[in-house]
Length: 302
Image 1 (spheres, rainbow, N blue to C red):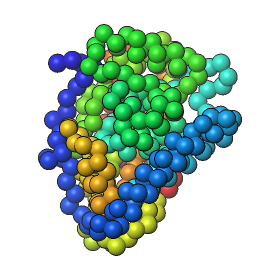
Image 2: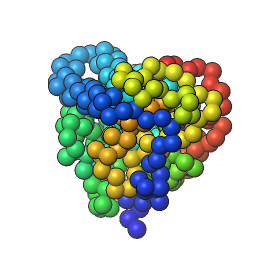
Image 3: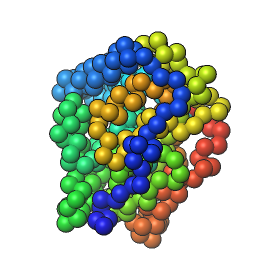
Image 4: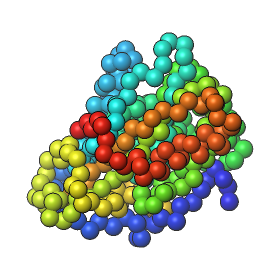
């Protein structure tokens, strides 16, 4: 097996179910159109955002990304301290690493840590999302070419050294969100070591409210931000796994009522001080997978 192209055991049939309330077709169509319109607005506005100062551009991207998730009818819960500038002028950027469950992970992370994404080259051909990713400085990688890995590491390292924030999903593929997920590949962490950058781990989860607490089927407005109900289950509807077509995943998300996306910001990990990239990858993976990360937070932002 190509170590740059891991395979998860998750499949749409086994992992992408939704047991809660569902929205009716008119409401789901309205949310699907709203979400696509929000993405399109970002694609059209990207050239203008590029002319803004760094701080204003980052605030705009965060608000837009937050709006994308909301537009698809998914509540957003941010736990921990949202992003602040990672570096002063001339200092390296930060490597943001997260577990990977869904295409929703991309705007969800951008709502907290806007940055240059590392993504599979196939995303470049996705409608709406592909052109937007390219304009946003996404670093595309051909995952099935192991010989391209050293060049990818150098590219990430150069971006970090130049002060950019780079977002990576080190599991290499999506998992359904149940259990501990996949192993964090060490390659991107070598780039952080080379650039002497800080690693910023975040944990992503999607929860579904119980059927009696889910939004009414006739609700057409994007859900308000809120903390999830006390008794919730992993939201399989958000999982984008295996050979699942993107349009099928989009439809599951907008038809599933009561979904909450949570991103939990974990303590930063300096690349300096650990013996090698594998140790750094294990440290980040442990932080993201550790169930203690789900303890009651001191700071919750809705």
